[in-house]
Every structure is written in structure tokens, then in C-alpha cells.
Length: 369
Image 1 (cartoon, helix red, strand yellow):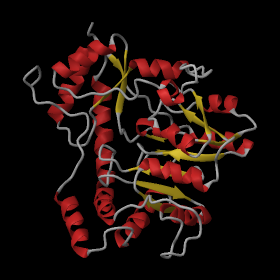
Image 2 (image 1 turned 90 degrees about the horizontal axis):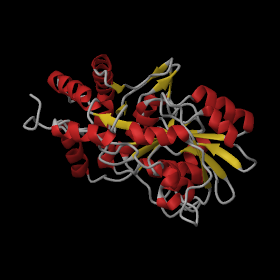
Image 3 (image 1 turned 90 degrees about the vertical axis):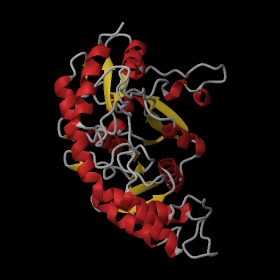
Image 4 (image 1 turned 180 degrees about the vertical axis):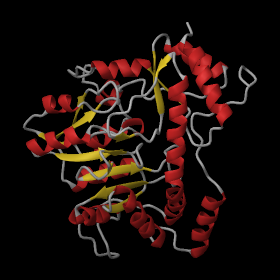
């Protein structure tokens, strides 16, 4: 059924099932609710998703990024290269440590940071590059990593939307010095709220564990200045349940995306790079015509949709110059994507009828004027 009386298809549908509820209740009854055995088990199990790297659980994806930049000692005078076509957290954390975000353009097909733009943006003050695996598609890590190695830069992966994505068989979170994941409810898996850092550097992992817990491993034996960015055991228990279902959910997202690819003709469907495994956190299309009209039509048809991100980070108020204008950034693909994209439902809870409605609606909306 489609039309104004059709049941609304939400753009995302977080799963909180009986297994998640039972896991949370079990932890609450145990009395061990913060930074306990569930967190340790979640870290161990998540390691299987990132090629066996050390994993450090924290209270959000933003905290994961923030702690990594703190642990690497970045601060005032340092420049960190980031894409502007992303969520503000990608640049917020750079500012939070006192460093300067340097915005670069994206590749039009993947919506991820353009390696050639990275190389052009490097200065003597550049210390790191932060590729974002946007919408669940891996950034071009083979090229980014080669550039970073030539210039002695750290690579910090923002993998908040890309649990299980891979390039050339290597999972995201296993390329750079660190990878950062989010477990916010709308992500491909969640823990209600939370984040995870992956790293192949045991020393960095220990520093991150200190930083998340007021700078101490043993109570009152503070070694460094730290913060409180711990994950609760309730969150970890939920995350463990979700992690066991992630592979099946990812497979269903990919099946859903393949169907939409085959049926949608009036919008530009997502591209997937060679050797990339896209996990479709979002199914993001480009509208050839009037995007506002397309969104209005989709809403009339009861098809949830969203625009991520209508205002690139470099145009957000905190990142404007003192005169209220953007800096000297030349980001044509970023501006074009911000003006054209719409994300359609692709989550694993969709039925075949839902998928057919989404495809039909997208084709109708793509011709809206």
C-alpha cells in the first residue's frame, strides 16, 4: 500500500529486543554496572571485527575520537586533515584538543575523503589525517595510508558508521594507528550509547585506558591527567548481544541495497569501489532535480528519508572565520553532495513490501517538480 494512508516506513529502526533487555537486567542485578566484566568481554569480542586489534570501550563515538587525539598528544599549532562532508564531531574533536581542522574535498562516488585533496592540503604543521568511512563505505585507505606514510602522518579512522566494512579484505579500524566506532542507537549496531577504539599499538591502548578513567588503572593511583569517558556494563552487555547479530544484519542491509539498486532509476544510486565492502549504514542517493520536492513527495508516500549533511562542517558557525564567512576552502564535490543527497531506508527490519514501496516512491519522487 502506498499513498497518504500508507504505514510510515522509518529511515532507521533501532533494535531493542528481548535479548538486549535481558542482558541489561542481568547486569543491573549483578551490581557490577560500570567498567566491569561486560566491558572487558565486549572489548575482546569486538576485536574479531578489527583483525584482532586491541579494543578500548568508551561512552561515545565522539569520545573515541577525542581520546585518540589526546593520547597522540595533538594540540595547538597542529593541523589535522578532515573531510567537511561529515558529522560535526569529526571536526569538533580536533578543536577540542586545540588543533586546527583542515577541510578537504570528497570523492563523488564514495562520498569519502579524496586522497589527492589530502596530499594537496599537507603543510609542515600537518600531524594527522582523519578519513571518515561515510554511510558505511570505506574510504580509499590504500591511497590514504600511502600518503600518510610518505609524510609521516598519523591516520585516525572515523568508522562511526562502518562496523564491518572493509577494503581489499582489511576491515575498517585496522588501517590506521586507531579506528573509532560509535554505538549510537541508529548505527548498524548499538549499545544504547557508546564507542570503541581499535589500535594495533599496545602502548597506545594502555594510554587510552588511562585517559578514559581519570588517568588511572588502579583506584587512586593516577598516572596521568584523564577524563571520565567510561562505558557502562549495561551498555557493553547490550553491545555484546548486538555484535552477535551484526553479520546477519549487515548481510540483510546489503541484500536490501542490491534490490534498491536494481529498481531505482530516477535517482543516482550508491556506487561501491572495487574491493570495497559497503555496509550501508545509509542508502544515499543523489537527486537529479528538485531535492525539496523529492523529499516532500517521499513524505507524502510515507517513506522516511533524511539529508546527511545539508550543511558541510566548514559552513557551520563554529568553523567560520571571525568575519562570519567560511575559510578559503575549495570543496566543489562537498558542496554538490550537500545539495543533492537523500538517504532512504535500508535497515534490516524492512519487508519486501517496504522495499518495493521505497523503490517505487523513489522513482516517483525523482521526477517530482
